[in-house]
Image 1 (spheres, rainbow, N blue to C red):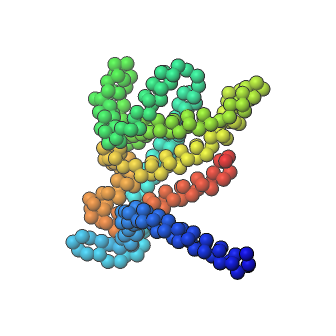
Image 2 (image 1 turned 90 degrees about the horizontal axis):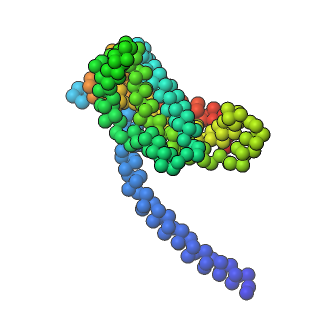
Image 3 (image 1 turned 180 degrees about the vertical axis):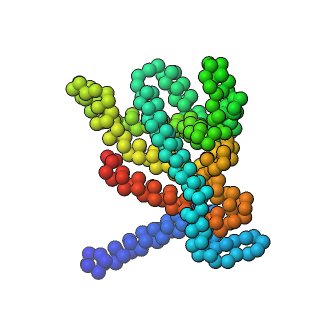
Length: 308
């Protein structure tokens, strides 16, 4: 076969392949088109509109006008907004610490030999709150936290002083965090159990034979091995905690005073309660930037602390 015939044969073979790739690409774009339309309509477009509104004063009846960075200046100079901002960070720090640490402790406790029925019972018991709606959980715990609720009932019967769980500015936030940990720690327990089952048994057995203490085995072998999962849990819990809304709103409505008011509650109140939509949009932008910054810092720290 001559060189010209060989090139012609290769060209004839490549043409159908190129046409097949084009058909496959068109089919792929056709399949993702509905998802892209939904994403652009309900995710990207609202984000763009929110950013634009954050630089404007908007009233559904009186119209709107451009105000630049005035909304952001108002947020960072208003003592009430600053307190709400710190409330959100405080809740995030406590909730993330509680959920991740308790979830890890439960996973360590359940990742050991025990009767199968008992193992599955404990896993189901701790995971069951995760699948219950947060609003329903908050309603039930609201009855527990009442001044005449179940907790104070048993405290009184034990001769202990009762506690103002939700009506005290000092106790309200820790009470909400306690409920949040009860509800969500089962999710982190499950993912930590899956990670612990991936730790090589031969390495752990060798450490046991060398007489390594359980505490040292945890810090030197277990924790470094599951560090990527721990990092994922921290990031996931942080993003969720920074957006907390329904549990606080149902239990305290942000009170007493502004002791438990979060940025999500502030957004709803400003935008849809006071109809200061531009200012509410600016608070939403600030919250989004905070989430991005915290996630970015965690990603930077993961390069030194996470072992892949």
